[in-house]
Image (cartoon, rainbow, N blue to C red; front, top):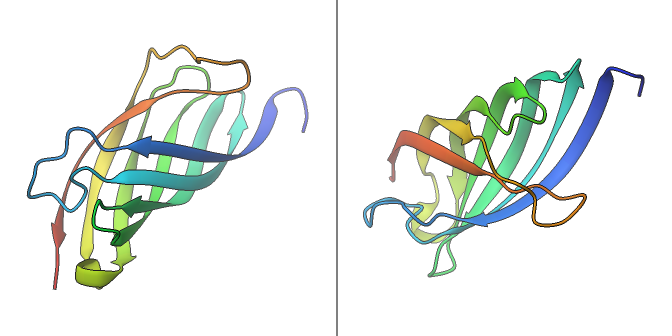
Length: 124
């Protein structure tokens, strides 16, 4: 946009390898769409929606918001479950996450990352 202003829209894919067996995200895959506006490398408005697909095919939906610095691969945010399908219809919950720094991209024009998350949930 200009020298120190960047608008970014992104899509990410991943897996949840370390959720406890009682977690609704146990062995789930994740797909997120988000966007942010960074000024001088700092963003305070990263936001998006994620869908978590469970091994049985049920899906859980969450929104998130985050802040951080571009290029550092670090940042902090919050998430909120907003619904689900099958046995997760009506799920409620929220929590927070940290984006862990230090991952080198495997290919030019891409990024790799990892979040450490904690929170609580209730299934009706």
